[in-house]
Image: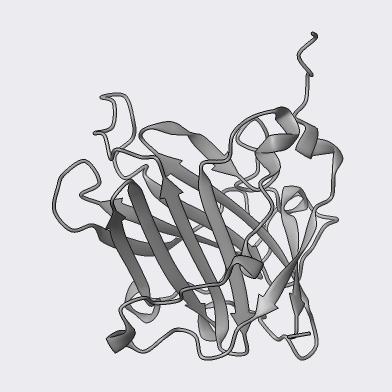
Length: 223
């Protein structure tokens, strides 16, 4: 069988529903930060190319911001290979509050966030370092937020790990669900045991800097 020259996700302009879940983030006393239901799960697009999707990624929104949860099952938390970049394990997110699909360079409404797992190769509790980063070749940079304003939590599971974070509306320049219900969105989940997972195309394309390659989240109200 001939191997396709391009990944199958390249041929689709993916638009997925993002459910409204009020009351997020949860109070600290609850333990979990988000605890998103199954209805918030994003499609596993790796299956288009016959590849497994090892991370369950869920998103939700409310007027206060955007919630993202990742659960990686089947990971033994192995130490990264010597040639693996430091801090490569965890989640990268790209959010465009204007869902600009006709430009190939980021605007001031495009944001990049990095959630780095700390201590994944050990046996103790997991830590999580969250930061906002610039986007290469951007036409303009989004305002930069302080990391401490982003609620985030990581947890080691029996057979993997989970991370949850909530991006408050104030760190998403242009986030206004009353006038715009579409967000550009992309992610990259990394783990030392597996190939990186993406929503749509991966690093064979400039997905980290070209918002026209990102998917669309359609912000939905409860049925």
